Length: 254
Ligand SMILES: Cc1cc2nc3c(=O)[nH]c(=O)nc-3n(C[C@H](O)[C@H](O)[C@H](O)COP(=O)(O)O)c2cc1C
Image (cartoon, rainbow, N blue to C red):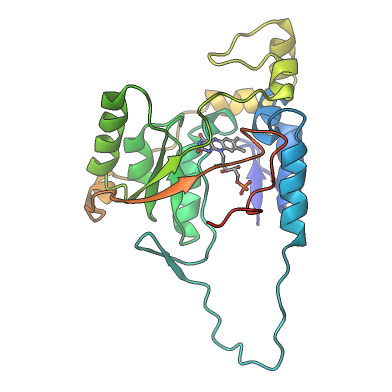
């Protein structure tokens, strides 16, 4: 990974690992935003369990096999992906980077994989679809107001969104202790503490004042194959929405 923080005077950071990226984010984002992105529900026991469970996963090495043709491609919900890794939905990615969802969709397409757009994105579905070069899926929570949900799905279909990822983990809003301590609210309320936090990160403010880069042409989105987003996948994210439960993937059959 070769990541550049800041647009005006690039100071390249070689991010070799996800932990490098995390450290870079901690330095460059106001704390209230870093904690929103990094924090989990409650005292983050389930986040820790998730990490430990993930670390326990192991590959079984096979020696003396032909590795001249290595192929990670998979087909998921009808889309051929370059690897079995896709970009999960993250709400309000624009807090971390201007037009965060647009950039993330571009990056996912570049990596040959799918981008799952959060229904709480800071960019419109249309803007993200115009920039996406790979498969674009939409994460939906079914709201009480079915007409609003239906209208969103219609917009997704119109721009060529290819699958729906149904979120089932948020019947209630979780309490994230870091957010409570930092006074993170939606919509944001800015007090002295939050203003000082932001003021300590001029590069973050500066990026916001730069005009957005033009999105790719809309034609690209419209040329995407018009398959109804009939395929769907269910998403639950223990750790961010609930605390004290089993790690992801443990004790679940699917
Ligand atoms: C900052 C942040 C925002 C997220 N926003 C959403 C969201 O809007 N919708 C959603 O379904 N999941 C959201 N998630 C959950 C992720 O998509 C993902 O399911 C979760 O992080 C667990 O994935 P992991 O086990 O790979 O970490 C968010 C996660 C993070 C860290």
